Length: 278
Ligand SMILES: Nc1ncnc2c1ncn2[C@@H]1O[C@H](COP(=O)(O)OP(=O)(O)OP(=O)(O)O)[C@@H](O)[C@H]1O
Image 1: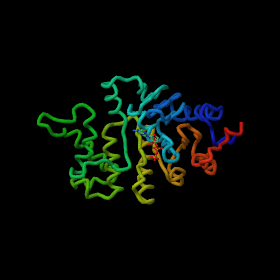
Image 2: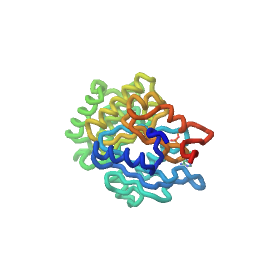
Image 3: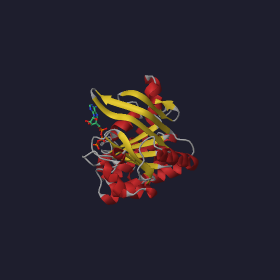
Image 4: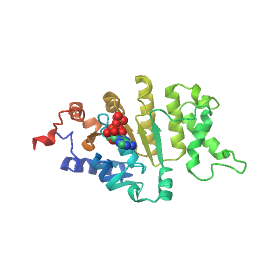
């Protein structure tokens, strides 16, 4: 079997994870033997994943392979049937509702359609990211000065402080995604999940948003998990690639070591891959 394509649980995968552990510290996200089903339909089947501080991991797989479901399982929104999904030390599958709310406040999320409130200003949209935590609203019902300052700093960081007072709907797609990223950072997340964050953007903007996400991973020392459909973007902007097929991890490898031709297995409808040779 190629060293670049590691099936879950293989010796190659274990070696790969150990070297990541040395490089990045202990994983902040640990998924083990996770099964998720929607009714009769099994979507994730025995899924394992580790995400380490400071790495941007690109999640690849054909439409319907389970990428969004995996992300939902990390915030307690997927119907898990067995296994565990630990985020920042807590097994999401075991948390009570109140505990889940706290955990969700520590997981930043970015979506394809940005999910901003169009009529509100860019600044207010970023401030809504603080609503998960305590102390965001002052005695007269406004956002606190400290939160407003932090929101402006984040807008500066993502390069659109000059748009702070504009309604979100007046911004371009790339700018709106930067606002959404600033909003996620307002939560001071321990993990950032980005579900197809560049699918609505042209290639140039897509690259700039992915560079920003990678800078966040490195600078803030958090794992950033990004699902993508465009392979060249994954190869250029990720530290590691994880590939799903029919709810199973077929690929997990540092991007620099990966032979891109091996990724065809993720999209191969015949269902033949290295494991079938054994
Ligand atoms: N809420 C739901 N109820 C029933 N089935 C669902 C639900 N959400 C997802 N599914 C099914 O689970 C499977 C995996 O969906 P998921 O959205 O995780 O795939 P994906 O890899 O993210 O796909 P895409 O790249 O198209 O976004 C699909 O067959 C989908 O129809």
